[in-house]
Image 1 (cartoon, rainbow, N blue to C red):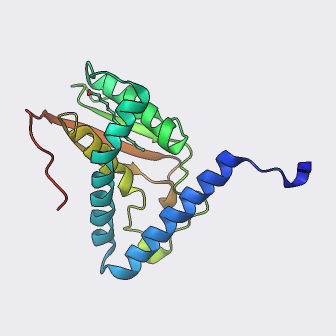
Image 2: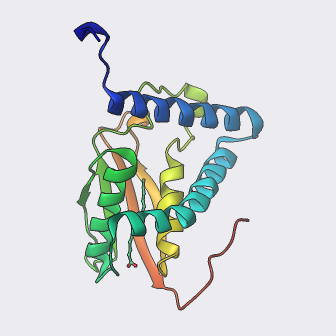
Length: 177
Ligand code: MYR
């Protein structure tokens, strides 16, 4: 293959993810009434992915139980590397040590994406928040996760906040409602 036609498989995969995710969001915007409905639906789909993805993550990485929330944050970083090919920074820990932010300087889900003015309420990457919530619920950690900064709204980075709520006692996942 000549130099000019050689391509980077990683880049092609990441573009495929970008386009597939974009198509999904665009369809939901068409099908649902409000941006708020799309945000909820993206979170819910992410949650359902997360409760499945955790098993794959644990078996692929051979990871053990988290010692504390710092350890959990590190494991979330490994998952971002593994599934999205990006390495966020963990910053802005709360004084109580129960909240932190993941800062993504680049985000494969939002490359090439521009939000029109009428969709400024859309939390385009909300699926990631759902994945985090679903995955952690399966290891008995009840967390909230939400988007604080959004490159699609002109912010410099994407910032995802994660807040520990409580440890779940042998609870079953809330289910796919
Ligand atoms: C344990 O304490 O049992 C292990 C905890 C492992 C936590 C792994 C969290 C994975 C979160 C997935 C986020 C993926 C975003 C693309």
